[in-house]
Length: 169
Image (cartoon, rainbow, N blue to C red; front, side, top):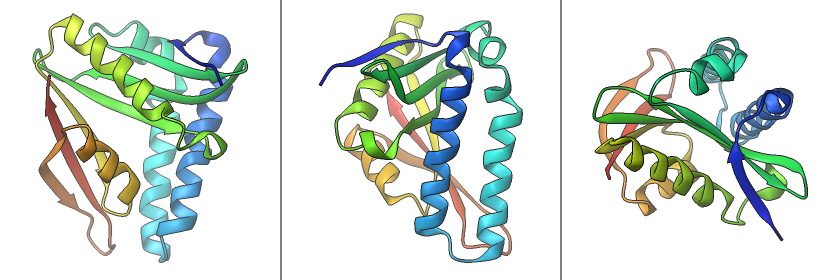
């Protein structure tokens, strides 16, 4: 199976939004069991879709020190990832998502490899990534890649906690 990781193009817009939102829906269905948790998480997903994923070109490709990639299998978009300039030394890994039928094939690792290589070339010394406490797969993945927890933010009236993980490059 051939996986192609390439820079985002405007024609990828709908496919990226679909991959991201479906991956998030999978997570919510599997791990969120209260209305409050689902509402807070849905607010996060809607925020991503209406902010940076509403205009990927402007948010990533035209933003200095940032970039966005897609993973294709047989010409079909199966994953995505962004790197976003946070500070002069830090880049934030954003919107890492892999379609359910393409998971466990190393695609997330390939996407992260591309993003981290870009970050090294750009001169960043650290990458950071946010994830939720209810995403054990994402937490295990980040830890396996050398990321460690540096801060957390609990959401009032829910069981959600947002964790920031960091990795020195």
